[in-house]
Length: 239
Image (cartoon, rainbow, N blue to C red; front, side):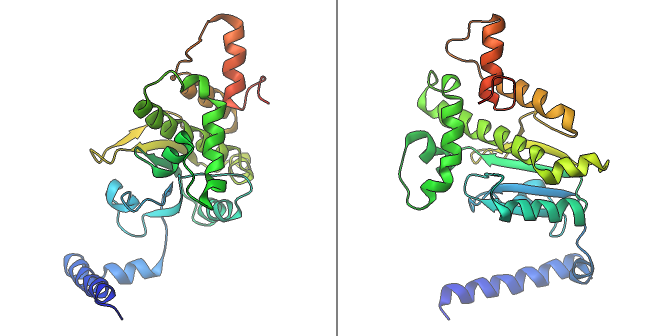
């Protein structure tokens, strides 16, 4: 075994000993039951640790992570994890959390090839293309930050429209989906105000969230409203 791995195991022993000394019986209680109220769907970036950011202990948040915090209806990994969290753990809140400076979002924004992951990041590129009139007039650095936020909003909608959430709401289960973005520079979470907690809120919350990012050619009136509906992906003008 390499020295690097020995160091990790040593760190683990020190952490376990310190945790047990600080809170006797912690691991015994933790092993008996997993009953988190929260699910975190976030980016795989190692700089974004869900428990530490939210000040929660192990066992208090159920975590699913992938490159660029994407949730698509063909991803059985993500959907199975969401179903387990909702139907078995009975979580009350699902947070989709992106982060500024996301390498996956940057690659999608700039058209950078990274390899096999290009196929996965196609989902983020689709978000960029769908909302390009809300992005192209912005400075490059701001484009990436806004795309990070838009990507979170899109994924919140995808979670809300999944059969898992639709079925949960149909049987009256209280569970809400939220959209947050984490700042690597200041360690702060930003609420994107796109919470969806029942089927009838999905379209309106989605459209309202995206309208916070003006188009370069916004003209007002009925035509603009149709265009707004089209690029949300949920409204009457959606493809």
